[in-house]
Every structure is written in structure tokens, then in C-alpha cells.
Amino acid sequence: MTNEHTPRWVKVFSIVAALLVVAFVVLHLAGLAPHGH
Amino acid sequence: MGTELSPRSRNVALIAHVSTSVGWFGAVLAFLSLAIVGLTADDAALADAAYRAMDVIGWDVIVPLCIASLVTGVVQSLGTKWGLVRHYWVLFKLLLNAFATVLLLVHMRPVDELARAAASGALTADVHHGMRVQLVFDASAALAVVLVANTLAILKPRGMTRYGRRISSGA
Image (spheres, each protein chain N blue to C red):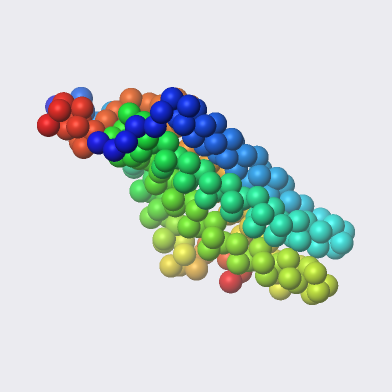
């Protein structure tokens, strides 16, 4: 039922965005992100 | 909900939004090219020039285009049937634009610092290496974000948010 309302691309997009945000936060917390300031 | 723009105003807003968004993409591409030159150039004078040019492009072109793209996008969506949060593609594009604008403003600091170091002849490969790598990374990420936002605008994939469905059903 929910599939009719929420297109697959929205789910994929949301999952990819969430993973990127988590990776960004983890890398920054771990000090592994490229930084210079 | 909201006031719809007249056809003429809608066209002006559309032209302004497309021009600023596409211009933003091109400017970020130039910025990335300069960041790569700054990181890889053997010639110190060339690296200095690249970072000083990045500072100018960043503040005089990318930041204004980024903000203009965000503002014209909001004006256009609020003034048309698309709305700001009715369709998933508009909502995602807004979030991407807002996210990119904040990150851009935060990450202009290393550009300022490298440009200052380049202008005073204090730019060194070992001291500033992290910042140089960061700029290539930031510019690549920004390019990807702008590309995704532009792709959403062109394809306009289907899908209404719960709010959009409620509005369109007349509730």
C-alpha cells in the first residue's frame, strides 16, 4: 500500500542520502575526513 | 495555497533559476579544476595563482550563484503549482541546495586561508597539504550535489509528499 504512495526512487534517494550523511559524520568524528582547519 | 506568479513572472523566475543553477555548476567545475591545479602543480607560482583565483571565483561567483539559485528556486516553487513541499523532487532539491549553501559558506574558510598564504608567499606543500586535498574533495562533492539537483529539476520524477497528496485531494 505504502509503495503506491512513496515511489521507489524516493526510498533509494533517502537511503543513499542517509548513508552519505552518516559516513560524513563518522569520518569527521573519527578525524579521517580530509581537513586542514 | 500561496499566490501564483503571472505567466511573465513565472518565465522570468524560471530563466533566473535555470541560469543561476547551470552557472553554479560551471563555476564549481572551474573551482575544482583550479583546486586540482593547486594540489598537483610543480610550479609554485602556478599553485599560488590557482588559490588566489579560487578565492575570487568562490566569493564573487559561486557564493552569489548558490544563494541566487536557492532564492529563485524557492520563489519559483512557491509561485507555481509545484509548491515547496508538495513534490518529493522539489523537496529534495531544496534540501540539497540548502545543505550545499551552508557547506559552501563553512568551507570557504580554507580557501581564504590558502589565498592569503599564496599572496604572502607562505604557501607550503607540507603545511597546507590537508587543506589542498580538502578543497579537491569539497569541490568534487559540491559538483555531485549540484549535478543531482539539476538532474532532479530536469527529470522531475513523480511522487507527491503526504502533504502534497492531501492538498491535491482538496482536504
